[in-house]
Length: 299
Image (cartoon, rainbow, N blue to C red; front, side, top):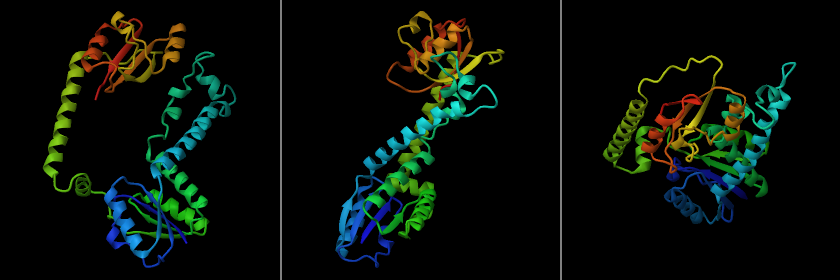
């Protein structure tokens, strides 16, 4: 019988009920964790029964599933403006700046994508797992993980597909103590000190940015367009001349400037290799306030 095991680091290997497995059962192992000890322990138990084991390249399968979903998602989001309208105009016409640029992709609807969310990650996992289940003609699924949403989705899939579905024992919940245990067994003091170190760095960095800007004026200009962007993501050649040219939305800024629109940039400071924090803060003082106002709230 072909059986699919889906596990992460929360599974309790010693408490799994493997009594229904038989010699020469084909086991397909789909690990959701990179912890080798968990995978090796399970493989040893399955070998003792005499099962044939195939460890799947789950990371590659998740990436492939994510890429397929991403293309479908982007196509879906791109088609929304032309489909949605309240009499006239439709969203495509409403968000258009000119024939080259649009505000649609900077809107909250399009900006709140799911690429880095649990929803998208779970969707990619389901896509990869169900593809394996269909391809390998899986008859039973053993799930040992701490993801309740994925657990429920797999249970529904198994019921619809007439696949046996069994839950493996796991740690009851993710606690701070369990998190420390997974990182390094007894080095609690080390992690507490690291947490305090990074918190102190964050505080000092934020204080430095606020001192550089002083008491910024309130964003109270009527008719101004507020754009939130990553900083420092600007044209390094123009910055010393006092000109702020955003590289994150280059065509959008060009179109808005051509129409005489006033832009207020809210810059989210993000660490990068293009320029140092000191250089970025120095350039902010020289940007021409007449062309674009820039406010920074770095963390």
